[in-house]
Length: 376
Image (cartoon, rainbow, N blue to C red; front, side):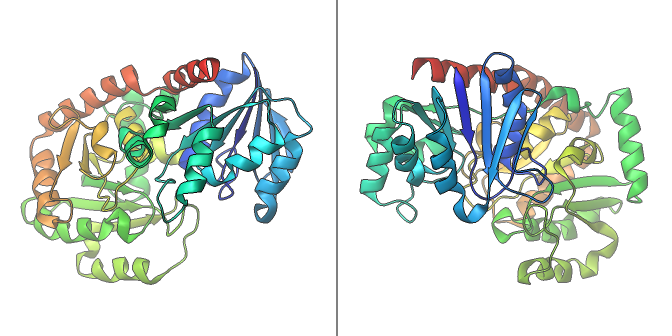
């Protein structure tokens, strides 16, 4: 198998600036490179050369402004058996023309078949031109197949995963050492730490957690909400919403900490600072990969019943799913429960780690994709 992965035109690969697609590729491509020829196309970045080979994986990068055109032109010079395109159904026709004999696989990490993004005739053409479609959650699968039943037979759910060698469970000796180190770094010794990790956008809902803290600290005056992230992946600039978060937290200075952007390779360590992770998504989240990472770190998770998030969190097994997703008091109640019962919190975290090990390794993701490629 001669395999090409084509990223979107937003972030480079490897994941030097984060990104769920790029992180997944970093995780699965070593598996494929041991058995097959692997090429990854992504946009250029000052941190990376235009072309290089690393660990048996070839990387080819083109400018964002002409990424799809140049990638398609380059494909004509290659002989890929399989071309795996991420999140760009509107570009499938281009890659079909460039390499008509290749099997085309389309992966969806978002609702890319929305009528706001794709006209029905474009959608049907993309479905017809694909040999297989994969989605990161059952929710995202439904966004395709409910609109276009023609896609049902060729659409498969493939959950993402993590590299467990990079995650120490929170209660392990190594995890405890890292926890102490990072808590000392941020002055969080002897604190109860609630983590939010994600982009600072209204759709992610961190403002609701700030409001929830007003209730939490009444029962747990030593609690601190640590908000990890920037306004856009690796960007730490201030926009109207970020300024709003700062203003909202002003009266709770001792209980709210903004770390700004932290590189993805440090997230396994950052997670160990926390007593829990809270995902406060307000939009129909495809399925935020931070759920996998928090489970790998052995943290209990509080998430919202929005999009695909609840597919990997089983209520009272590895966390809680909040149906009143826009109510700060609902978050406050579950946060307080976990802070009050350390035994419950530890049990949910341990269950999450075991559940993730069984279901959400990059190896399992790669093996499922391999079967899809071979059967396409």
